[in-house]
Image (cartoon, rainbow, N blue to C red; front, side, top):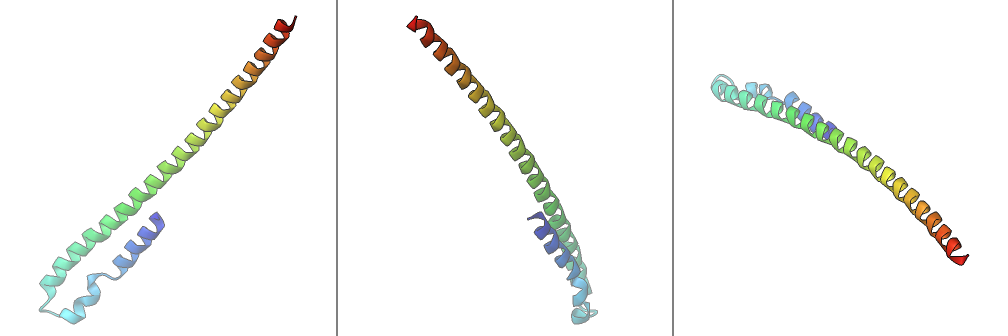
Length: 98
């Protein structure tokens, strides 16, 4: 998703207000100046948003790996504990049978 946002920001930057200069001419220079400032702020915000989304994606991927490792470790511990309990129960049954 971050790549899509970055691509949208690049497309917005490429279609800046400068293409409107011939349409507005000398009369619209003040307007184009204001639009240019707003446009630059917008493209900067889109770039920052893309960076934020990318960092969120990286953090989510790292968390998923951590959760998977923890889950696997807990599963292994529980399996080992269950095996020990089964062996101990079997030994107890064998002693009771004597």
